[in-house]
Length: 285
Image (cartoon, rainbow, N blue to C red; front, side, top):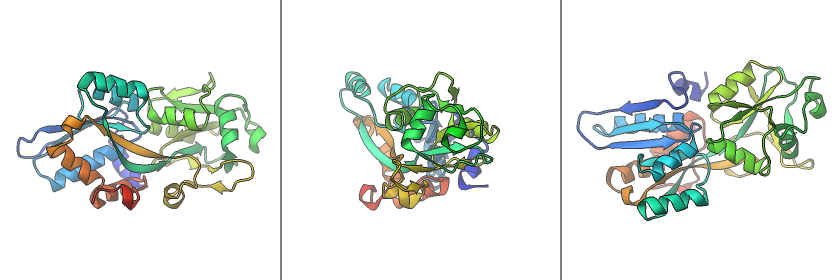
């Protein structure tokens, strides 16, 4: 069992973790990225052990859902696996008069998964683009078996979906045949059960399928996602994970929690869950 599986078993996308202590501290709410929901729940669990009496509620639903909740002022924190968009900034300014404060809270190497039986071990970014847009439809075109490719993707409210579309598909649409899944765990389950399948998701996921090494182009080396390759930026599909907050709320218990997330204690949780800690210059000392 890998590090993520220990936290994943009782959780599904969109689930809620609600932990209470013995006092009546105000509840901190965090909503958004399904990619981050396991990490956010483990942060809450560990923080509550260290800060008795604090209440933290964590909900998934996708980065877009988190930004909508931030705009509607129904969440304190928005967990996001992509950067906030201009229209979302405008909506927040209209709602509460300020641009949300952005915190980088972890690093992620977005992994591409295939079935364990698939002989393909590496692909270029261009090949990924052609596969996920439907231009390459059979595994034999990229060195695999003579089987049609089954594409598994995320729903369009997902920050992972938007990041992959922007950075791998160069803004092109996914193939019409792509099967939309409610979360990365669902993508992995589908890929694990289908020798024809391909999908993508955060680096902390991966049990039951294998991740591919990715080449920036034909002349580049094939790089696997790992802490060193992600932190150095040599893995082609890396990203930051974010938390956004209304600046007016970034004080007291909320500020203390955000500081802890970026401290050594919070970053230790990042590594335990299977993502990659921030470099020292981005951490809160």
